[in-house]
Image (cartoon, rainbow, N blue to C red; front, side, top):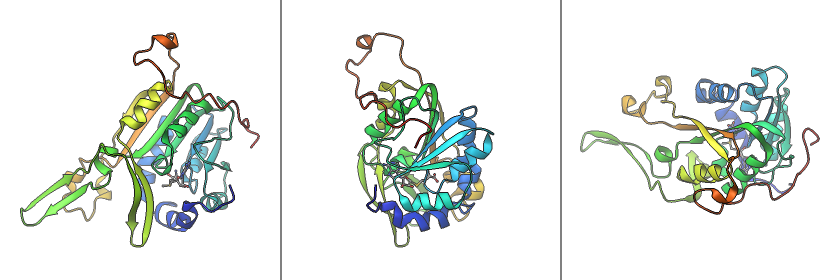
Length: 271
Ligand SMILES: C[S@@+](CC[C@H](N)C(=O)[O-])C[C@H]1O[C@@H](n2cnc3c(N)ncnc32)[C@H](O)[C@@H]1O
């Protein structure tokens, strides 16, 4: 993977704006959720690890835990390695993970799947590398409330503040200006585009968290009470539990790609 990745140019902005405590949402919400939901997992993959802040926190949270961060962007990985620590980093894409079947008992994917081209391939790869009984923690921007065209509206004429929801069911991919002069490509998908493929891959939803935005993060909001009731983050926790019934007996008939067609790739921990 020698060609430049879109996130190489974004790596300095990401590091400055979101890591090292710059974005309190990580310290207050994201990292604690990842640590709690992956408690007890010993071999963890951070898929789309970026600058590695979640991987480092997970490594620090439990002694002896092996953690690998994977990201397609050399720029992000350079910053991750420069931050040091025990996570090992591998360059690669979620659509083709360079690990053996069942190599991990935990996989976390934090605010990264929205940037992947092929969500079905990524989810199939997660199912392949996650051992039976393993846990998958998927953190996404809440698709219902944070999609394109969504956000708070402060209507001064009607003297009303409300939350507008964009075209939730329309899958779309495109650039969004996230900071002045900074454009990031996001894919918006309804929740069913994650939950249904995962169900077909025997990844059972065991917990869903929609943390209310914390008051200290809402300074400057025209209506903090309203915003405190609109989740930004959606955390989904799945367990890999293959169905005991014969394949053919499953409701809904044919099952989409199960993530085990590609055979084993390089095995843990040889990359
Ligand atoms: C918003 S950053 C999140 C980084 C990190 N997970 C965190 O929470 O700090 C998104 C990351 O997804 C990565 N990414 C983009 N496409 C990807 C893909 N197909 N597979 C895996 N990661 C991808 C980007 O390179 C980027 O580092």
